[in-house]
Amino acid sequence: MAAGAPVHVTELVATVRAGFPSPAEDLGAQRIDLTAKLIQHPQATFLMKARGDSMRDAGIFDGDVLVVDRAVQARSGHVVIAVIDGEFVCKTLSIRAGRMKLKAANPGHPDIVPRESQTVEVWGVVTAAIKQMPT
Image (cartoon, rainbow, N blue to C red; front, side, top):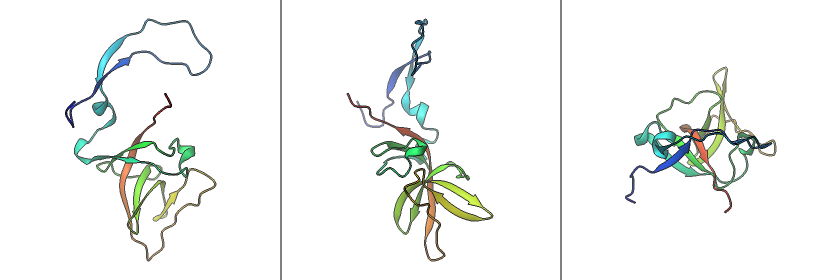
């Protein structure tokens, strides 16, 4: 498969219960392009691998592949990739009264409140997290 070529997989037009089983439904299937499904701005989208567990309560775990869109305007409440003093971090952006805070989604990790002397850039917005399941 050529690099950058669309990857088409089959999407079933059905929901999957993750609890109690229900009677089988008629399943409709169609081919979809995962790139088109996950990426709105291809020229501004990057994949990054998550490390650590500071965002676990937001559903982001160590080893997840993050889809990061730099064309999306970051707003308070978005999960973002920020660069703090040259280091990438993934946190939830919080802006109140003009003050920025980068919030962890795990009570065992501190929030980041940038100091006056720090260089902080919101680099992109996380639009999806892709997980690999054990096989």
